[in-house]
Length: 246
Image (cartoon, rainbow, N blue to C red):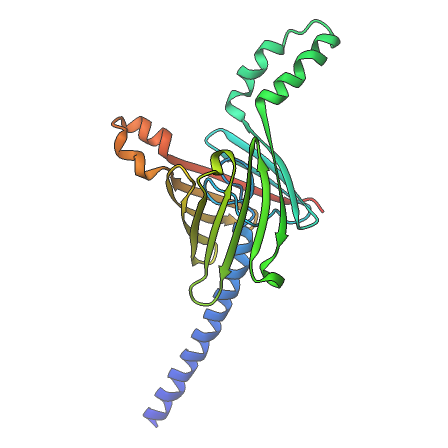
C-alpha cells in the first residue's frame, strides 16, 4: 500500500509539474510579444541599439525614455510603425533661441528649423512575418539611416530569437545578435550594432511597462579610465510604456 501511495503521489506531482511548465511556457510566449514592443536606444522597435523585424502593434502607442533620450512610436495596421526621437533633456536649450520671437512671420521662419534640429523621425514596415513566411523581415529608416533586418524566433525549450541586418549610415557594417528568454517576462540580449558589443536585460515590470538594463560598447570600456565616464557612456537604463489607443 505504501508503494502504491508513493506511485500515485509521484504521478500527481509529475502531472502538476507538466501543467505548471506548460502554463509558464505559454506565459513566456505572451511575455515575449510584450517585450518585442519596446523601443531601442535610437527610436524604432528593437533591442538595445539595433532595430528588430517587429513593429508596434496596430493602435499601440509606445513612449520610451533612456537617459534623457525620448521616443514616441505608434503602430498602424500591424505592419507599419512611425515615430520621433529627441533629446528630452536638451529641448529647453534647443528652443531658447526661438522663445522671444516678435512676430508670426519670424515663428514661421524659425520653428521649422527648431523641429528639424531637435527631432528625428523613424519609420518601419514589416514585409514578412514568421507566422506565415517562416521568418520575419522588415525595412526602415531612422533619421538619415536606412536598414533591412531579418529575424527568426526559435520556440521550444530554447526560446531564442536570432537577428541580422544591414543598411546605410550607422548600419553599413551590418548588425546582429540573439536574445534568450530567461523566464516569463525577462530576456537576455546580446548584440553587435556595427560599432560595438552590447549586452542587456529586458524585463516586464507590468503588462504595459518594460524595463531595460544594458551595457553598451563593452569592448571599449577598458579605454576609459574615469568611472563617471564609464557609467555615463556605457551603462544604459530605460523604460518603455505601452498604451493601446484602439
